[in-house]
Length: 541
Picture 1 (cartoon, helix red, strand yellow):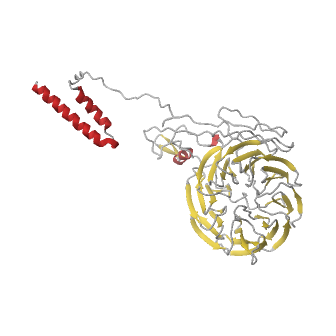
Picture 2: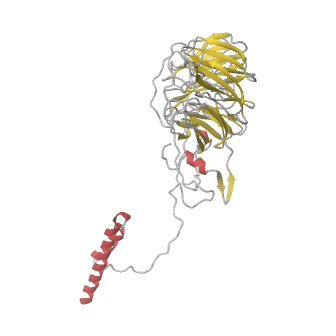
Picture 3: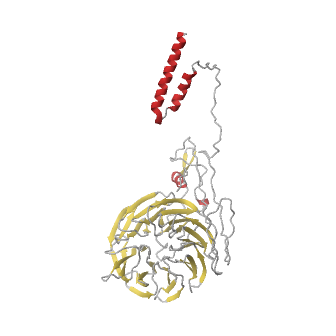
């Protein structure tokens, strides 16, 4: 974040309570609670991407952000006031309120996956090492090597079992994969299942979905792939289907249907129910209220009828969409490679707002009116929230609970205006228009949401809030000094005749700084000599 003196994150860090008189009142509770979390990729083991929580429908701004120094390919996960993020060879944990890094674990040999978190323990795999780790509070609880191969598949947890996938090569160099079921307590192996085709790679991170006692996973095998249903209790195959398309995304399972990319299959036997041609989909779908939301490398977000695959709307961004959408309370949140995070109306696809971040935007996690998301190449993690939920103090606290007499200014940050994106006219009545702004000046008003139309229209805006500059007591800094002074009746002395000596005596201490100490000493000596000579001359006269 920029250097604004007392930053928003710094304010939250020091404002653990409110001082009233000599008493320290407890701080307000965090918006995250122990009963609500985003524990793994896709929100839950079935990868639905549709939690029962609240998300911002109005313009957001940066609550805090931190540079993690390496690429972030996966979604953050959140549990009990902690954000977990896999980046490069590290798994890192941050405080949801302040963005302060709590701990970092370095596991070499390739990038780590998105973790799955259960009761404060994070489970993840590292890419080239094909090792699964259980980390609690930054300390390793256990680790288990899964043989030769690479692990880029984010784990899923159901009950006391961790499910994850590993890529490996066959005797003739063919791509193969293995699904592992491990005990959460010690990593001991419960069962394994071998697949045709690889499960996940560094830039195409497919993960298993687990629903109703079955593990579902897609693989890639050249220009085609496989879709498997595996009994979650013992690893036996329930059904397998060779697909004409590759399966670079994770499946989502809702109401007896498996959705992968823009295709739907019966969860009981693998019968294809429908397919929609939207190009390559490394984006994993989110499913809510009878609609499938998915991104594509053709730059579009699609809303498809969950029962027959009919297009309900599509929204075009300025870049490919490899991230996975999230649906919360009637709003679709999705990151694009055009560096923007979009919030779209789930009903008609109109843009509610967008915010430009530092780089290509990954898959978000949305929880309690906040959005946690990472950027890919620059490796920045953000917490975003509406302006009315970001700290805008009028009484800046000090670093310690004890108040001081020194007034402290504080500055709050408003959303930075960005370049206006190019309007994208809708091709059909089912393709809503894109808003023309990604950030709104403070004097704008907020029009209603854009309806479905064949002409481009301007999306809604919101007015960011800001706090006035104030002193430690919350008042203007132009107040008067309350101290009093006594009037002196002593007649000031007459100036001496030798003004040169007096002038040198005044200039000398002014010039005496750390950089010119030597020169100051010389000037002082000269002044003393001149004064002494003046005294001698007066005595002679």
